[in-house]
Length: 62
Figure 1 (tube, rainbow, N blue to C red):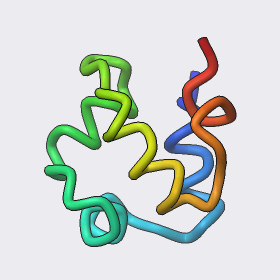
Figure 2 (cartoon, rainbow, N blue to C red; figure 1 turned 30 degrees about the vertical axis):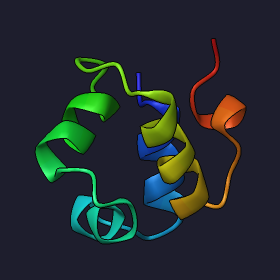
Figure 3 (cartoon, one colour; figure 1 turned 180 degrees about the horizontal axis):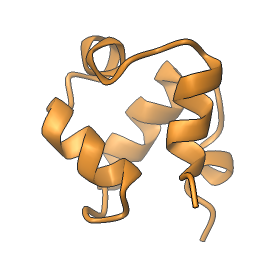
Figure 4 (cartoon, one colour; figure 1 turned 180 degrees about the vertical axis):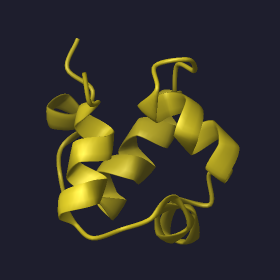
């Protein structure tokens, strides 16, 4: 199953490097987030949502 984060990034035409430039979150950590290996902090969730022009709830439904 493709993560919502990866799906949003793909449709935005962004690479992990592009997302890193916008969030300053390490590319390895971003990759782990997409694969569900790493749990992001609230601050990281907010940075990713902003970069992907989305809401935290949409990308990280809980």
